[in-house]
Every structure is written in structure tokens, then in C-alpha cells.
Length: 196
Image 1: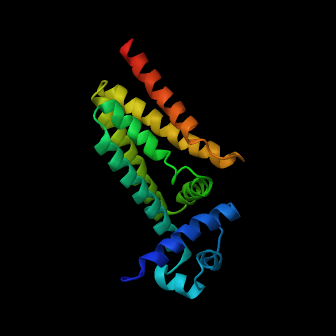
Image 2: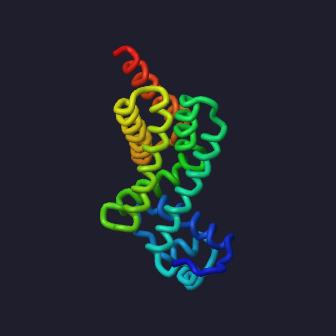
Image 3: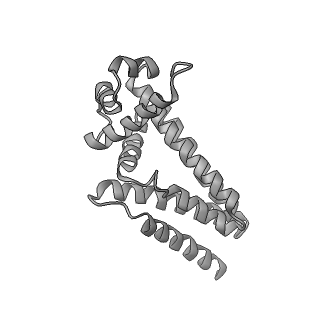
């Protein structure tokens, strides 16, 4: 558990360093020493604040999800129609802080880690449920309940799949292309539903 009263600046530096170290190494097998060096603090201080590497990496996952959640809330508050809410959710998921090479690498690593870690799996399942729920809520105002669930699931799969694709490509992620592709999917599904 993080220590109460820890300095927020050092905490954020260690979280950012964890993301960068995972990206540089290309795996979850970074050491607390590598992360501490990247943050410019001692390994002892990193252990003092987080206890263990697993706790630091879990805190990093939570931090990324918290930032994403804030971006989604802002997008939902700015939207005036259900379709704008869907677009806001999509755009937030491909935000410049989230959809950059180091963060994409971190997400891919966290997904792999979640297969064997109960706490990591729980954190990611909260994200997945919220994403589907937010999409479904907006979609139900446009189309029927079963269609809304199906389109929400497909949209979430598109978002996750585009992260996976960009994690495996050796090129700079194209946010706008990812947004357009996901929007095209939603539009095609809504049009197909309207024509049934």
C-alpha cells in the first residue's frame, strides 16, 4: 500500500517512470531499481512509497484509468446528444496522453499481467465494465437494448484491438485514424440497425 502523506510529485514521477521503463524494456520484467533510476529517486524511496514493484505497477494502472476516467467524464459533460456522448468516449480513449507509445506499451503489459494477477484483473475488469456501460447508456437512447449491447461490445473491442495493433507496430500511433475507424464502425452498425 502507498504510504499516507507521500509527496504527490514523487509518486507521479515513479508512476511516469514505471510507464517509461516498461516501454523501454518491452515487458513487465522491469526492476524497482530501473523504475527508481528513471524517476531520479533511490530504490529505497520507491519501496518506501509503494512497498513492491507489483504495488507500484498496480498504482500505475489505477492512475492511467483515473486519468482516462476524468477525460471521459469531461467528454460526457460536453456532449449534447447521445451520439456526441459516444464520440466523446471514443475520443477520450484515444486521447494524446493515453494513445502514445509508452502508455500503449504499458497497457499491453498490464493486460498480459492481468491473466495471472487477481488485483490487475480486477482493475482492468472495472475499466471494461465502465467502458461498456458508458457506451451502452448512450447507444440505448439511439437504438434498441440488444443492439446497444452488441454495438457497445464491438466498439470496446475496436478500441482494445487498436491499442493492441499499435503496441505491435513499429510506428507512431495515429490517434485520428484510430478515432475515424472506430467512429466508422459505430456509424455502420447504427445504419445497419436502422435499415433492419
